[in-house]
Amino acid sequence: MKLFSSQVFPNLWILALATAPLLVFWAIFTYGIDTFYGDELFYIPRLVRIADGNFTVTEIFALHHNHRPTIPFLITAFFVFTTGWHGPYKYMLAVAFAALTFWAIAWLAKKTFTNASRITHMLFALLVITYLLSLTQYTIWSQGMFLSITLLMACAVWAIALLWQNTSSMRVVGAVILCSAATLTLHQGFLIWLTCLFLIWFHRRIHPLTFAWGTLTIAVIALYHTDFSNGRFESDPLILLERPSEFFLFFFAFLGSPLAPGSLPVAAAIGFILVIAAIFLTVRSFAHHRHLRVSLPWIATLALSAALALSAAAGRAWLGSAYALQPRYIAMSSLFFIAVMALGIIHAPTERTQRALRLLFATLILVGVTYSVLAIPNIQARAQDLGDGRRCAYAIETASKNCIHRGLKNEQLSDDEIRAHVCALKEHDLFRAVY
Image (cartoon, rainbow, N blue to C red; front, side, top):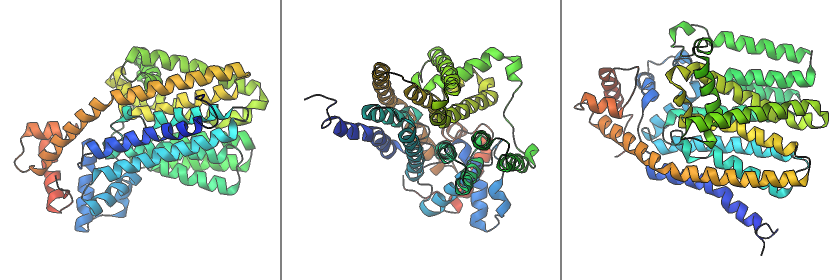
């Protein structure tokens, strides 16, 4: 019986499609720890004020560095007051946002891969879910703060999915809601507003809607940056001029990290190849107008993902190029190579080219699964670190400074400030999950 027969392959595909989420679920419920870590410590004073009844509505929009993480804070507050900081529930929400991203990409593939075979569609879907739900992103599945990344991605891809075909009033309203949600998640949400502006301009050119969206984008950016001097702006755009080699090494490694998460030179080389392929396929799309409309959502995704990489390089390259391989970045950078692969399908002119792409997809799927398996020791080590932090939090009154610094790591808070925050949390019975 042939592997790719109509009877066998669909069943194998369904089984394989379930592998990535099942691996993530296993990791969450095996190694998920009920605790706070890093940036989540900044939420504690606001949570305590909610418990005391001293919280003001404007605090929902408070700055955290150069972000206003309103939605992640509200999600955290909900879980803290209902479950006592039960981690796996938040991690499952991160998986749900990633699943919404997969749904949007699968829907776009169905609409745009007009000449692709059924097997090509299936392998592409496997490729997408393998990398969107990869265990190499283990910090997303083990640290509640990073659900903001999967939420941002879901908002971005669905906004593109709404506007790529037409700009009817209902679609525009939906895109405004998604862009607003992304902006109240991470600072990079502005990039989604700009991506949608490109899509609206493509459909309407010089039109009142184009000007209205542009005006709204400017207004949102201006409002967002009100009292911005009170935050801690971490980006350093001048690094491009001061250390261009460091900047571009970070940029290319960021984009190539899903395919080489453990090697900076290899990731940078892959990222460079992907950028060249993206430029070639984008130019080809505009040169062949019959492909342009179906290529549009993938071009928009490429532009957004590249902008995210530039933003990360401006904000983090000063920490060193190796920072581009942070596990939490892999989700965002995956969008870039997924969009490149999608454009490859659209522009594959012959069945022979389609077969070559299917072989490439199968190879990349095996590589992605291998990386997920190899990431398990990292997940175990992460669980150990978070477990140490949890034990330290339960004994915070008598915990040593070494325990606090190692287990409840936060570079902006002193050990004494962390101790005071955690004590206040426990006094209000907001950290009550049983160890």
